Amino acid sequence: LERKAIDVRTDTAVVGIKEGPHPKEDFDLTVAQLGDGTQLPFGMLVWSAGLAPVKFAESCGLEADRRTGRIQVDQYLRVEGQRGRIFAVGDCATDPSNPL
Image (tube, rainbow, N blue to C red; front, top):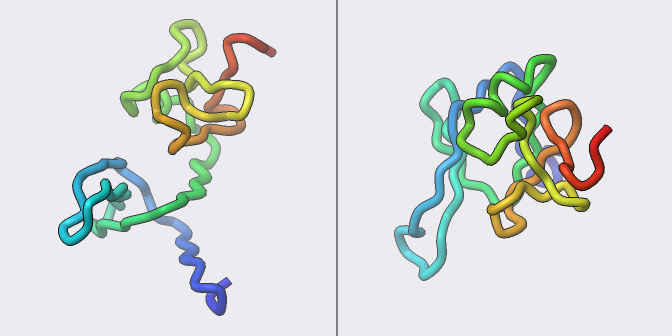
């Protein structure tokens, strides 16, 4: 993965995601805020939240199911209201049109 310039981090907490204007270009930049203070700009972020994603899902500010606390996604696992830029999979996600 390193040869392909893929940044893999283990034992690293993501404490927030924010979007804002790129300092030099005319487009928005998405940045992950890591627990150690690192700001990590990204185009695609694959994030595995471990064994307890539901607490994060309930407090992350994304639209969540009131009953389960899981992040609402569409049939393609895109998070509702995020213009196809954020995906949620696994135990933290639910598709209201196709409940388990």
